[in-house]
Amino acid sequence: MSDEPREFHKPVRRPAELFDRLYSAEDPAEVSRAAHSTAQALLSRVREEPDAAVIERLVTFTDEHGIDDIAELWSRSPATSLPGALWRLYLLQLMIHDDPRTAALLYERGRVELASSDDMVAGAPTPAGPEELVALIDVILRGAFTGDFAIALDRAAAFCRVQAAGSTHLADDYEPTESDRASALTRRALRLADYGTDLAACAALWRRDTLT
Image (cartoon, rainbow, N blue to C red; front, side, top):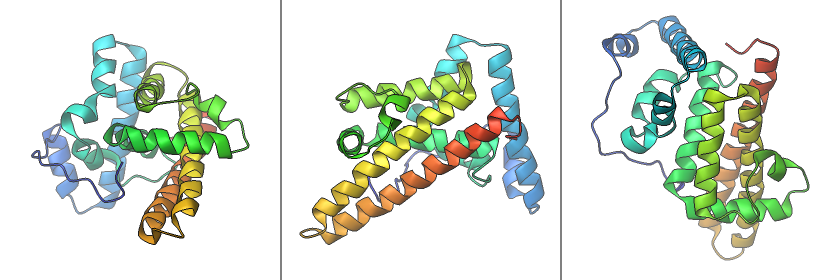
């Protein structure tokens, strides 16, 4: 993903009148309640009645519609909450889909530099090219809907840590000659590190049945 905010030129599509009312409401508590209830309802419904076509639409949602609808639902939620976790999973997917070549460069650099098992936890092949990373992040998101939710979050957190390490080391390479590029990579590393921390915390809460 580029380090500048991505612009979407499609009109915003709102899922239902409920959310039109919700996000024009003045009460933040109402926004929070609806964010949590929609996240819980979505995850519960998909898990109770798994349908391959529905799951595929959820995994490919941002490719077709962008991130606006999901942002309206969950972007204001706390980092360690169910809607916050789903929001970060979709953001991570968008980052990889948006610029898979850079993602692959950062991942490979992080895999080499990071002395941990995160590469194995994330589950990427070695080496991982752009197509492999796009496939991997889709597998992780699909696992959130069909498999062990905590494992999916842990894999995503590990993925973030590898990418963050790669971005940090690449920033060091650029610092002597391209300070602006180095600064952008450092900011990206910090965002990815934050995502990793948040997703790992959500995984721990899910295992304790306290992620809501």
